[in-house]
Image (cartoon, rainbow, N blue to C red; front, side, top):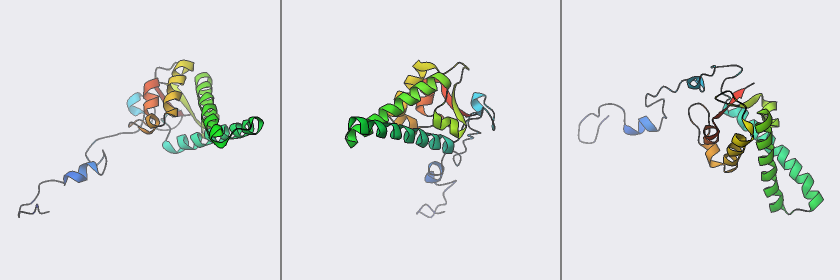
Length: 161
């Protein structure tokens, strides 16, 4: 590879190290969750993105159904129904994760939320986690253990059942 002045460049181009991700830069990411003491596979291993996303769609769909039912009773406008769908989703996630560690969608997908210290998630940490999920952006920023900022703030992780 030429640098334009007749010299050969030593090593890869600078774009090859960051465009290819952390692995191309030589970082060893390992298996998600193993740094936290979780197994690589099976029950208790860090849940993958696919099942988490499917669980989110199921929970959102259930919230939309409930909001649509109430919308007919109270004659909500479409913007009101959208807001109430978000409120119902938030209440569902807060209560179910805080009390039993899983939502309906997560249960159907075979995953649950656990605290890293082994204690139950509880209503306070579940509330903090849910507020960050409702803000959307913290839930989109993930680390190498498949934990979003909402999970890191609540010291939780989503694992397989």
